[in-house]
Image 1 (tube, helix red, strand yellow):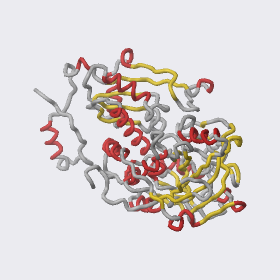
Image 2 (cartoon, helix red, strand yellow):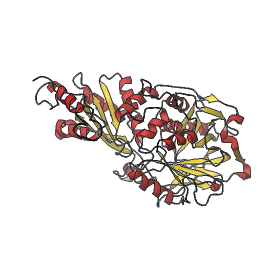
Image 3 (cartoon, one colour):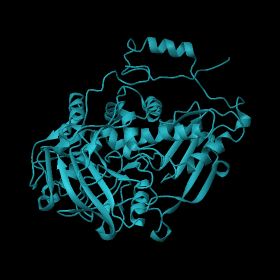
Image 4 (spheres, one colour):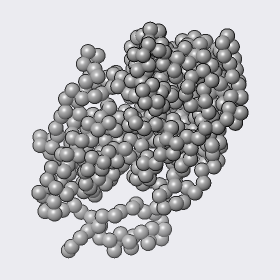
Length: 499
């Protein structure tokens, strides 16, 4: 292992090879029995993931016309699979993974173009009357879903026609027919903004959707990069190597050359079909049935017996938005705070149990000046990395581990006086189906800012926190096995000072 926490070799180039690594690590479960994509596949994923978070490969989906497979819970609640996907040491703690991820997120490696003959994604291609999306597995996840969703675990590429920069995002896509698939894009995000730019020119928006990519590409597409940055470069930084791409045959967009399944098409401004709802990451149905844009599919390309990635949206730990999202969002929060010039940022954590990491963020700081904690609270609440959906932001001192919810609750219940240490921001950005709000009030929510730090002017004064003495801690650690204690001793880095 390198000093930055990365492993020396990343022995995979695509989803299939990464899954083999997962299999060897005991992180993949394969189902060879026939499984119905109508709710049964999702139910297996939901229930199994609540006991043990493995990736689930369904090799025999029911009723498909073309040999194909479905992968669910690709990353889910597994920090280990996240680490494997980006070449980090799986034995690192969550806090160490966040620190290592901050280094990875700063890296940019541009993609490398390969010839079509060297792109496995072109093993099978269909155009014109040969296009039939109904031949492939599209799960219905929840009983109240508006239809079947064709791989919510996708990466959707849309170019900005002004700058030429390609954005990659992840959007839910409901299956409408053999050549038509929906696309539901979050307002304000780069994808829909790029789409509108094409429409303002009087042109349809070219789009390319890839399913079954290297998981790092999927993760990069879920993050909020700057308008001037490409997620393709970010994915290359995560894996430490260029993403291999080739050129689309109908649209001027890059195709991940080793993706499992790809569609090329166009989004027309005047064409919509009724979409939704879908059981989402927060555990509720999201988006009433309403007209949404659709993709007019012009080509399908896929590998033989492709693996379509189906991202189950559900409350933690069963949803796809789990450990990886919490770690990456936390890393971006730390980076943004430091980029804004704040001192003493120790760590942060977007706890995945809070609506898949969207609801609750804890930030640990070393206070250095009056108002430091209040400043961190206000900036965290409104930064791009944390503003969407977050309802509770807590700031704690540097002796509190933000990744340990018990430690955070201790700080909140001992350091924060509700009458003095909680502020509320109103009319803030929340999600379109926030169940705490009436439909007419969405998407305007609120955020609680909780200062769970010792008051700056009281630092060093009584009451003092009780710590172990260092020599006693070392003595007990050295006797751990002799005393018959299980596991490894807890790591402690704060000790009693003075008499």
